[in-house]
Length: 270
Ligand SMILES: NC(=O)c1ccc[n+]([C@@H]2O[C@H](COP(=O)([O-])OP(=O)(O)OC[C@H]3O[C@@H](n4cnc5c(N)ncnc54)[C@H](O)[C@@H]3O)[C@@H](O)[C@H]2O)c1
Image 1 (cartoon, rainbow, N blue to C red):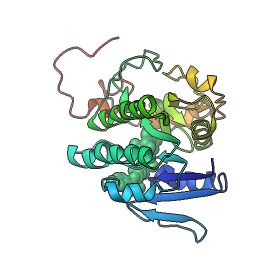
Image 2 (tube, rainbow, N blue to C red):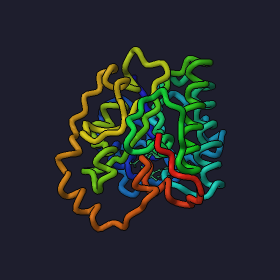
Image 3 (tube, helix red, strand yellow):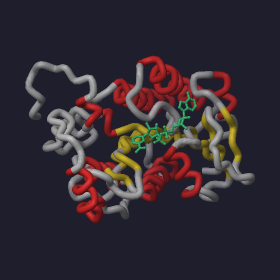
């Protein structure tokens, strides 16, 4: 892998990855529609709006691998999600196909499956259960990636990222926390592992309370270093200050599930 494009480079994860992945590949091209505030003289940055197909096609020229972080990263109105996460994602995969990009690592989310109850452990074979318009856009991204993998031979890895932070900050995050260095490990598997065709992996660290069977990532060599449980006391103390949320506390997706919730039926138990 000689040339890697990181989209969403001005965002929270992008800002971390710029430091953690520096020098890891001969060329790292950064992109976002916003210029990173702390851009260094030795970094290559190309501004592009994902919703602009011509700009995206220019952006991926000469690139072998894409780490696709760009897009709306929380729940939002339909229009911004449509532009960045649906149209923008299509533009990215289509440009990748046309320009001969070999691999894409797509930042999917636990919110693609957020409506599974916390008492259930899920793998990668259960149907998606998005908990928001945002979650639907991530399920769409996984499906689009699968199309380009199976039809065009792009090697695609969708990472269902839990929550990237220095440590888990509440009870839910004890289950879904992802140490930034572990994310780098998963990205490198997606960019480099010879067996990658079309993969889904959970972007979570070695958390005792994980709700996910991450066997596919382990099969491909993932050895997470982060242990969420080491932050148990602080996370549970922070949780104690939060209001009860009967729907959000029941489902894996948390407040993404309870927001706008008006289902008169009993919460799903399975
Ligand atoms: N932070 C997490 O813990 C987490 C968890 C699950 C999934 N993810 C996913 O990982 C990715 C990065 O997350 P983040 O926390 O850094 O998000 P972020 O919101 O901090 O960064 C996203 C970046 O994408 C850019 N962007 C949005 N729309 C764009 C467009 N149309 N064209 C070009 N750039 C555009 C924004 O300017 C922003 O800099 C997102 O796709 C998010 O959905 C993050």
